[in-house]
Amino acid sequence: MVNKNFLVLSFFALFLILFYFMVAPQYKNYEKNTILLGASLPLSGINSHLGRDIVVGANTYFSHTNARGGIQGKKIEFIQYDDKYEPENTFSNTIKLITKDEVFALFGFVGTPTVKRVLPIIVESNIPFIAPYTGALFLRTKDTDNIVNFRSSYTDELDALVEYLTRQKNITRFAIFYQNDDYGEEGYIALTNALSKRNLTLIAEGTYKRNTLSIRHAIHEIEAAKPEAIILVGAYKPTARFIEKVKEYGSSKIIFCPISFVNADALMGELQGKGDNILFSQTVPSYDDFYSKEAVEYLKNLAFYYPDEKPSLVSYEAYLAAKTTVAALNSINGTITRSKFLDKLKHVSPRTLDNIPLFYHNAQLLNQVYLSNYVNGKFEIIQKYEY
Image 1 (tube, one colour):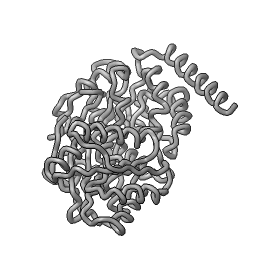
Image 2: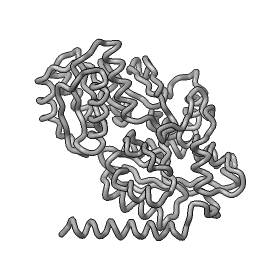
Image 3: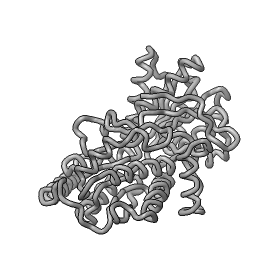
Image 4: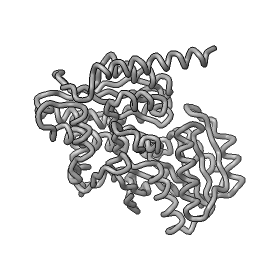
């Protein structure tokens, strides 16, 4: 009975969304005094650091833009609702953002299972869905014309990690520790495909439940197989706990490889800066590269608008995504519409960001993966891959 009621409510919500967009088509002028962007993301719970960093990074650039007059005299407003990284909360938040708040676009959603829950609404409503913090493949298909990803995919990240480890380290024994949901499954499939391309297979796997620290069984399963490298597709707290326990009881030579969603800065904070034998995957360059115009600008603006916040790769990515979004909005001639915005974003200048090329391909603008080590308090890039 619960499942039946759930389906009825979901259908009714989708009907409301479709009806709303029948009377608010894509070509309608956006006549509000502000350009309203909205997000559902975790602002409490075990993944709250991700939501907070997205808000801080994006709002840093939006505030910078507003201080300089905004877009055609309109200020950008970025509103958020907390979903605690739970899909059903994301569902209700998304309906509220679209029908009650009447946002111009959705921006900066966090998570694979959360975004997957609202994908039917996003596709059917055709509202611009910009820069979600996930590398899921289901957001990178021909059927998602209104979705513009900023970051590289998990497929790209896992291929880069496997390429480096097999070519540079001669590693053949891979295991995976992953979250037991859609996010973890995306990473698992991407890893097995990357290994298969090189005639390799996984030797062990271990999972944990989303929003928990239940890792004991995963440790036992993986340690027994004696892997050379362990791919980590999880949240930062369970990932940190896993690394600590494996280092305590396992081989000191194992290379731990967290993908970008783990949040490298939060992970290093949890591990108290002990980054030995950890190979990070990033979708943006390091923010502490003082030869980078974008990094210097980010640090300066972050210190001005959020003086109490520390820089992070997550907030830097959100900052760059916000800057790209503003560039697309600024390039619109005449009235601002959703369809014009999507077109301008997909055709944004490759040189919008200094030394970070943008090219719309496979529904994403960034097509690079950076591998790094954490040395003396900084993420040092050791390899870059283009996709």
